[in-house]
Image (cartoon, rainbow, N blue to C red):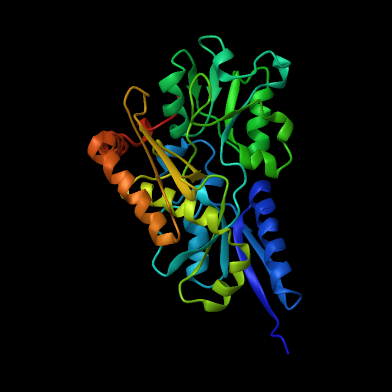
Length: 341
């Protein structure tokens, strides 16, 4: 007789997080069958509750640490994270057990409805236009190419940010969001432009893990580890481990301007992983870029790829850029921010 049991899933209490959790439950239910039940335990994390402090000033773990405490205390069995929100160093006894198939990893531009389609791309915006984002990574990279634009912080869930963008008194001429969140919530039509490394006018590399979901479990929990294998996408997981290795090696977090882009490509008749990395100063004036393509067969090789490229970039000046940012964070916590207006 098949054992019946209930799996408690922790997640953030937001429309996007709950939608993402439903995707995971659907995948796990299909593989596990009717003997396994799922309970969702949602909560508002520090990042959800604090609507005023600039995200870079809140530091690492703002979306994850409280959920991880519940995992360690066995109040939940698995956490569904947006992988880009997960620090690369996890609490003792916790492991990243699965990474799901990636939604579109790119960032996108959303223009206010009031513009009526007047602008199609960031390069079309006139000098002095205000672009909203809560990410120093996005702002730093875009300042590098779009020197005439002004960047201002915009906080809130996706619905809130879209409303602020559309508000005539909001003052935004565009906002930058992750494609994955918009697509998962059915806001495809709001995407005005996709941004990637090759974008005309100036590219943008996405956040580490962006577009993928990470399932965090307790180390040694073999039953849950076996269960969540049904959600694993091996190509995404290897790409994500390479990206996370870059950030871990450079000792960065989700609030520092490290951009990545991974893609599986055919090279000399073999399937290989191409990894691009950009580390940019807050003002966009200094940057170090790197790229490497290698044949990757497992997670260890993926991590080695990320580490070797990160070490190369560190020697070429990336570490100097990040050290300056961390020094600024320590000396004046409120100074690490998106806004320059």
